[in-house]
Length: 591
Image (cartoon, rainbow, N blue to C red; front, side):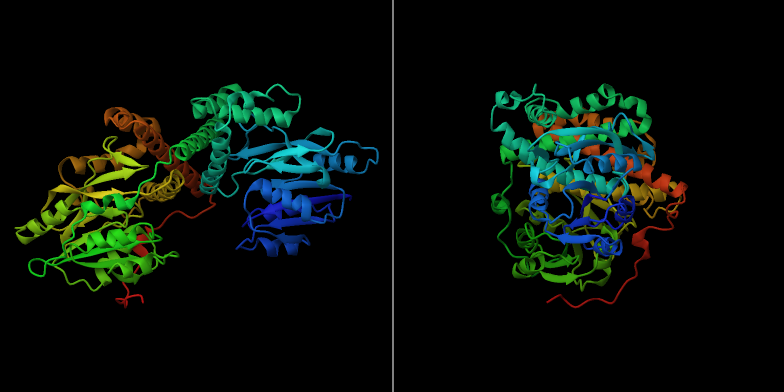
């Protein structure tokens, strides 16, 4: 066989064996690996492939390095991803080309059979054409992501298709991956928008398919409503509607991806960042009083080096500060210690488990406990109110505290994100968190009431970090839905958590909301229209879109997990992960 195979990998132990099986006809298979941490390299060597490793930087640079530095055995190379499979029909076609000494073309495009939700999605995920068969000396690539080939010579097209299992690892990896891809697309779009529309239109009518595709792509960065246009194009223009549920979901997911690109481009153009130092003046300069009620502050952390120093300074105005860290890999622990906190470490299992572990194991001595997130600050007015109410609490055992949110460079006043009440201050030993993976709430023994002043929620998130967090939260929330579906949820009964309107809202959220149709659209309408998110301007629109997408991701991941249980691919859930933990002996301070 006179064809070499190139396979790019990073942690592909699940898919690589199937890919290698499909190219056993080749005597020169090169696995170009980006330092995988799983068994990818071992599997490649078990199949007799050559392994070459390089740290990934971006797609075009990575592929160009392979073209210039890999010593392929044969003149012709076919490139595959690990989740793709060669077909016998395409194998015969490439062998015929490679064996022809008179072949003047130097590259060939081929299409893919794309599978989604266990079916060939032939319209919404149209085969398209991708340049995959080539002579390396005649090829180079451009663009950071979805690279465009620049071909030095004539090229052709294959009618035969290869197979693509793009969702073989599930929906969560696809979402994470496209959050990363949208960063690189936004960088490209940002650079394109710094030029002129006329320049982007220059090659839109060329006969060169690759240049025409690039011109259309560049032009789209200047158009409004890119995400909606992409949905209509795939679902109606490409007839994705005839692919059934798979066609609808794929169209919606790509539309969501396009919206991420648009938001990240605007983020680059506006440079809408928050400087935590802008809030220094809101923090009291007074130390915690030596007389009166004692308050301990617990700050759960993981990789919060950006926030932690100021948060600890703010918390110290209340009393003794404990940073409960989940094995951070940045400077969180050092910065917290330097700011005056006592630092303890405990492996993370769930948000509820971590906080409950801290309540049970940290050497707390105060009369009251305040739970503070690492991106929250206690302004002077709230600090004074806390000391005032705890000095004469009567029968009250817990206090709800409001939060003012600062995100993407400005204060968020509407959209249902303000007011945001959280039970954070309580008598020691009188409260703990319900057994829930995410969006856990406090169970407090005794009467509770509300404070007038709010804490500040200073989120330094980029759009990428915000999306990444909510992909993670959607995964956890869908787990809770699955547990609830099979009757093994660990959450507390709502009447133990809230009173009045908050209790009613939480009951609706947990019992009625998961059964509601059109949840993403309802969430958008609720935030943007009913809760006046429109008055927050562009950030109000973006948050309403992002949170509607969050609802969509929960539903999609939930359906995937329930389908896997019904198909016998995974076991039915038994209990909440937070319930499996046991109390350990109290640790010594780290360091």
